[in-house]
Image 1 (cartoon, one colour):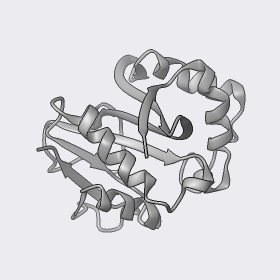
Image 2 (tube, one colour):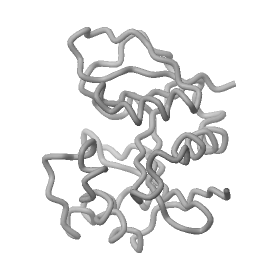
Image 3 (cartoon, one colour):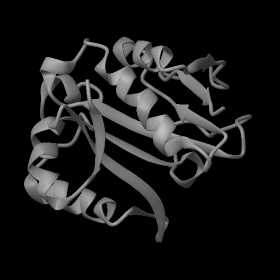
Length: 174
């Protein structure tokens, strides 16, 4: 199994569109957005250049297509957790905190252990030395993502808001 991470390029936008509208991705990503080629271009064009505008300022973001044996199968993005607002304020977490979002776009690869393997490789390649810890906050109902992250070495944390619909998870970079 050969997994590589190709920097996001405009030629990947049609693939992102397909994946973002796939039911197994749509269940957890932007359920309220009907993705179109124009929306994908609007959202991801700056990601190709390594940033996202937040609060009027460019914030660094790394966006990649996950390839398995030279076949695109998923997407992952990586950034400073404190640069982008979340549903819950990040309280009591390490000051040097990266975060990521990912999905397996190709349904055939879901539930095969590829996600956790890709995540482990990604964290080894891109997580160190920029951050001491990596944060994830999957939906509490997204059992597949939670298991994937645990398999990759993430530990569950106590959430400061007990009514939250997300699970806080942390990975310590060694």
